[in-house]
Length: 221
Ligand code: HEM
Image 1 (tube, rainbow, N blue to C red):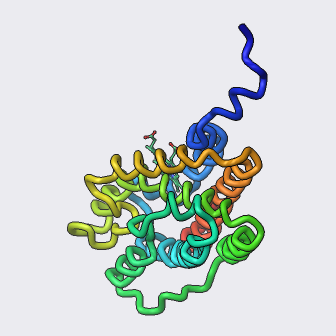
Image 2 (image 1 turned 60 degrees about the horizontal axis):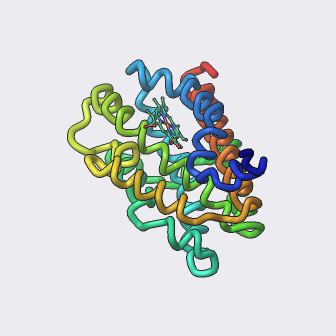
């Protein structure tokens, strides 16, 4: 017997849709010059430190918005947990590298993205779960990237890699918990689409940010 044609879309868990529909965006961010240099162990330390400063702007704005909307947007309250927040880890990493000015000049892509986060927060707060998915998901590859960074800059323990590898051994369990919380939401289709669109925008802006940073500091795109 044939199922109604819209049954698959309506019943596909959002985390499956996010993984499938953002795969090209993940491929793009993974292959920017910055990431290739990091994986190959030849990323200048200044570029790594500068990326933390850019990510601080993004996380600051996103995490402020998530906290602000936890009361009026139940899906945010059920998915977002304080341990997911990265502002403290970014500050600790920057401090480890001797950075005292936590307000680096935002690159064009960073400046654009933080205003887009503001727009999402005021137009459709539930879509903030898109950027949160991308940044929480980035901790999966981050664990491997942290091991490269430790070797490259001769770091000990968690120093300088708290952002990339915040969960240590709890990584798999925390990702599974995030996935389950997202899938339990069962949002209306229009909200699912808004979350997916916002996650694709996040990948795009972060890809641009890394490209701009690498071009300025390393001289390649
Ligand atoms: C060279 C850099 C990177 C590598 C090698 C890498 C690698 C990985 C790996 C191995 C996974 C886990 C796949 C699985 O267990 O199914 C993953 C997942 C993920 N990564 Fe990356 N990653 C990189 C950069 C990034 C960046 C910069 C972001 C975001 C800004 C990102 C976002 C994500 C997301 C959202 C997921 C979860 C995908 C899902 O829904 O299952 N990754 N990555």
